[in-house]
Amino acid sequence: MSGTGRTDGGRGRLGSVLSGLASAVGCVLFIGGFVWGALLYRPYTVPTHSMSPTIAPGDRVLAQRIDGSEVRRGDVVVFADPVWGDAPMVKRVVGVGGDEVACCDGAGRMTVRGRAVEEPYLRGDGPASPIGFTVSVPEGKLFLLGDERWTSVDSRSHLQEAGQGTVPAGAVSARLDAVAWPLGGVLERPRGFAALPGGISDPGPIRPILAAVTLGAVLVLGGAAWGPVAGLAARWRAAGGTGATGGTGATGATGGRTGDG
Image (cartoon, rainbow, N blue to C red; front, side, top):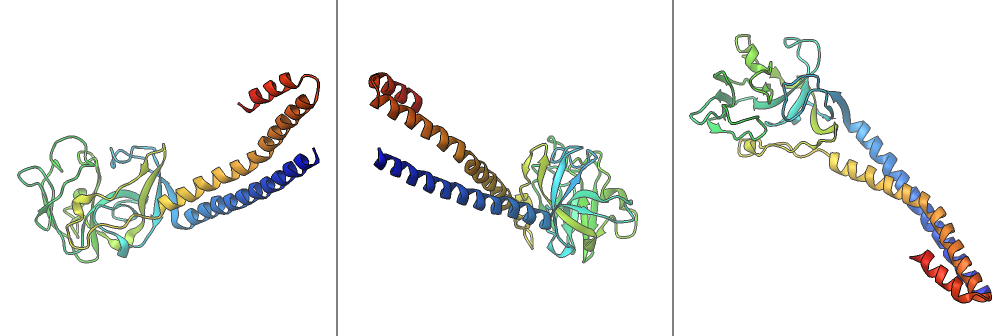
């Protein structure tokens, strides 16, 4: 009995150490992930249909803080321009400085620098825009469209103004990486712009941040649950041992097997 007690005690101490270590590592990952995310990302609520079906009205999104030099075609960005209004707006970048953006070709597709762009994020099989346009984007400017091309108020609405609806790249403050609520996952970079000069942007760190927070939560909960589980297991073993030394050892052993199962 004394040997069994020492063994159980050693197991208990080892379990306590591992439980504490798991909880400590979990706390570091969980808190570190949140801090990392808070430094790089900012939440926004999209109030309109202009980015449907990619983003629905009322969706809560996470946008990585960036400046205009990091913007690439296909990015969904947050920007503010007094010509467009006082509130920040969310649109997709389809043209950068030096591009000629036109719509539509014979297949109803938008072209950038003469290259047709596949846009799988658009709704339905209609043309990429209900109105035709051809715009030469000045250096340092961006041409932006909503994914709901039939109703979105975007660069096409300002074609007759100076700059033909383009926006200074410096007006961009963030790039959308994920729909946080309702859970919509990470926004993938559209491959249709990848072959153009400059390519598409690299994914933000949202996936490793989410992985750190999730793993941290699992470790914290697992470490916290170890104590009660270990205590219950010890009571089961103790009950089995008492039954084996008593007059009803067979009954005690059977009970022990049932408890372990």
